[in-house]
Length: 228
Image 1 (tube, rainbow, N blue to C red):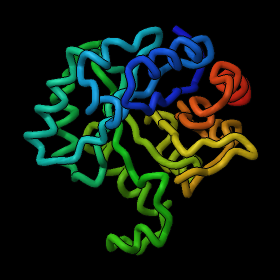
Image 2: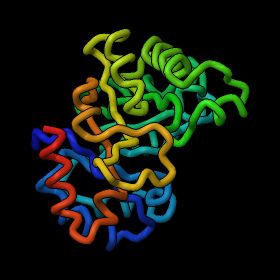
Image 3: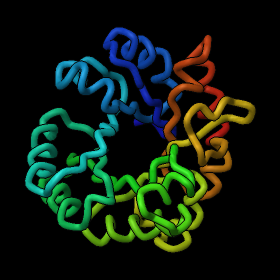
Image 4: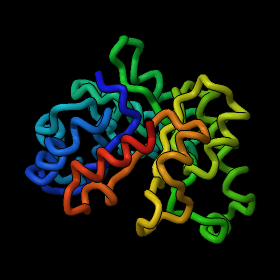
């Protein structure tokens, strides 16, 4: 098992493209991320086609508890290492997901997604949340962990706050990572790989700065080295 804390997001609907990226970056990362775009296009067969590292299945499940539990049970045979649910789905939904994951040693870690990295205070206010992002992230993180989640997903800007408030126990998976000088794309709350790790991240998730590079392997190696 690699000691790398880098998760490379293979965000594409094309299996062949994802496989090529996976082959290139596998020596420089600890996990791959497959999200909605890939999974909806390719399903279980696409998941099984991606090999070389464990997979973080980032589906951000958000529905009534019974439906979310059924979705978790449906993906268990694929063996994802981590699986996401939206923490704003409430405690009963999170608990249903965790219960459905079971207690086998190789069960997926259930992670609660707090506030998307594309959202800023204005975006939160538009949906009726007038607290600043760090306060809402901490509220949702506590809700998720109280209902059995193994950890949470948050932006790098909230990582230190969560680590201080929650201790070393929860797994913190951090997207919104951009190397110095890289384009932010649609990310509103970002840090560099080194900054995120120093703040207390367990894992950092990087997609376009790697997969959009002319040499994805070199880009992944540079980010992995910085995170280390």
